[in-house]
Image (cartoon, rainbow, N blue to C red; front, top):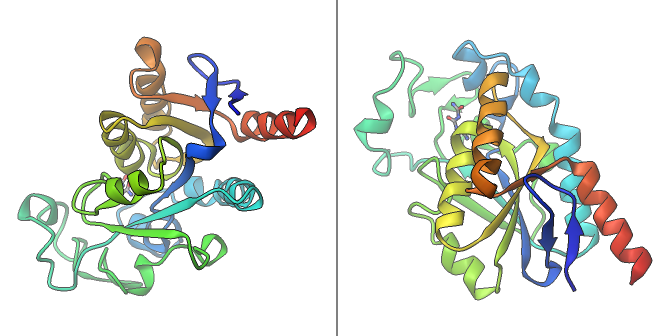
Length: 227
Ligand code: TIU
């Protein structure tokens, strides 16, 4: 049964049987004060502010028994999956693989690379370590989702214009219908967040749809009332 969700640029018809939530890179190094994001000079309080909304969104999917995918931007300790084109960015000492305040930056297994404890994956949820900005590059995630019959993805996480937007574009190219929860995503740059959302919904939803969490909650409540 399709559940209509009020969204931009027009209604999103959500099919719970084919739906999954994707939470992009809600990792300590991007979000916590004292992490990699903060060391780069970013105001991480913008990102910490969305944590309760992301938590509520994850809770909605868990309550309805719907799949949740968590991604982490993570590289192997030998950095064999991090090409120089990605690694040699920024100042020495603040690059991927360098020692940061919470372990080696964006290296799998390091404290800063973990998902925030309040958003931690539950056993049985899909956790993807991705060496790229997009969640399909070198991860096998498309096969995992296809095996489960997933065709629609609800998106949350950080940052809107980098890993979230890249993942949505990759997903759209692979045939997934994508709905971004606007207040469950954030950027270090407010104008980039706003611009990314506009780019996603422009031209008739050229990448996907966008809506606040309240609209998704209302749609689920409406569906339960009418069930
Ligand atoms: N997850 C993600 O977006 N990775 C980034 O490096 N984002 C920045 O905005 N830097």
